[in-house]
Amino acid sequence: MKADIHPQYHLIKVVMTDGTEFQTRSTYGEEGATLNLDIDPKTHPAWTGGTQQLLDRGGRLSRFNSRFGNLSFGKK
Image (cartoon, rainbow, N blue to C red; front, top):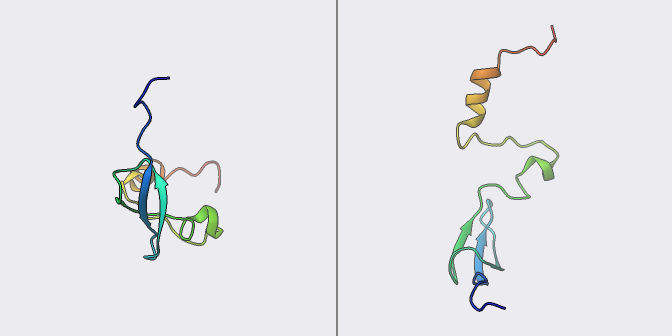
């Protein structure tokens, strides 16, 4: 096998949206890096039953609504 072809696997700190932290092993960043989550299982609608609203972070939702928001899809 070839040497040094695999990414480095090390400990990082993950910070959830509510501020809780935990350490895990990952190939993200460097040793001791911090990964701040925007959406996690405590806030994502798939895990919360859809009661929370996702923020439109990239403008995609507003762009979609501006293009297709006035369609009725056959409903009157």
